[in-house]
Length: 408
Image (cartoon, rainbow, N blue to C red):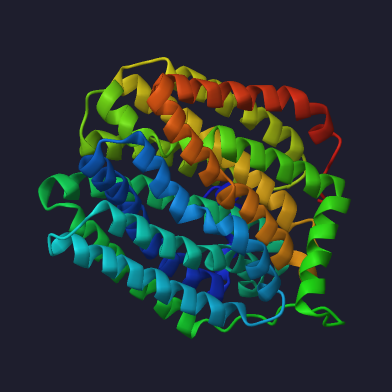
């Protein structure tokens, strides 16, 4: 007998379109996490530089800061499925390119940086389109919060499996096979997208010019107190605390004295916690009380990051990263759920585009800065500063956050 809470969490899978995308995307995400870990390790192996680690992450995500809002506006006007298909093809080609340069023995840092940049541009279009496409895969939008939570669970299940596989494969056969397997994994999500028949999205009754529609989305986000508060908090955490992910290879090697396998296990520990966080959110029957949950998880995330930065024991590090991943997952997934359940359908793409800018696009600037700071004061101290900033944010924004409440 499946518990009622778990049945509720899995309700979104009763929709054929969402079910197809869920399993297709899940296969692809495992490959994507393998590539992330292998690429970071390869860059650090070639250079031994934390700055290069920060630059790899920066180039892979920074284009989102300049493109995602426009991609969100496009998502509100054109076929999300068609644009998503082309974006996935682009990401697959970049994975093949990485595999080729590494397996042929010609990998150089400039090639890794260039491919990261191109992949970042493609991802900048793909992410807000995918986020806003979820509602069109559901026959009943009452399951939207559950679908968002399941998406987060899927992402972090892949974070659990992919890095562990990458750590083993890098040691056994090298980074190139991680990139090749990622390229092949895109076949699953492309197949799913081809056979999906999405529910028609709600279009604006008046089709404005593109630039006017884009600006309308910006104005809405600023005028809505709840949306504005969430976006400000996402931005600050993404810049100050999320760079701990980019610095993980350096922490694994320098602080813990480990290798690629150590790095893979640390990243998987984050995935275990994040997976548990996604399941917790999916099993929530009501989606009120999200602001309070966000505040509690932000505090826990800051405390976990501070504790992690102050220890040099592998087992304790893994335990702390499980707690950190759990609180990080619940915090960001709750923010996403708040936005998706409180914005009009005709503005969904534009609002989520700005959210992706704050979450994914601005964060790389923090990673680049963190990489430079780590070379000056050390990786542990840099991580400690990120945790402290997160705690201060929770104190400073707590009252404002608790004053907003999503619709039930």
